[in-house]
Length: 66
Picture 1 (cartoon, helix red, strand yellow):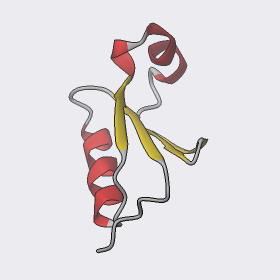
Picture 2 (tube, helix red, strand yellow):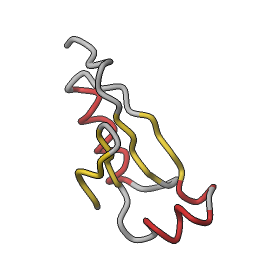
Picture 3 (cartoon, rainbow, N blue to C red):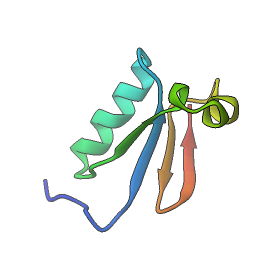
Picture 4 (cartoon, rainbow, N blue to C red):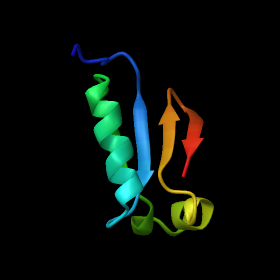
């Protein structure tokens, strides 16, 4: 499948999150190259997304949670 490089995709994730892994695999299957950001590395992100991961952001807008 062709890479969708013009779309900026970010997944806010944490280690050991099987849903995060599934979201990453699915987005890759559709040709996206998501950037993975570990929320546990940033106290602000951990507070913001603690129980909501994965959070998928597309072109700066949050589109999916958990």
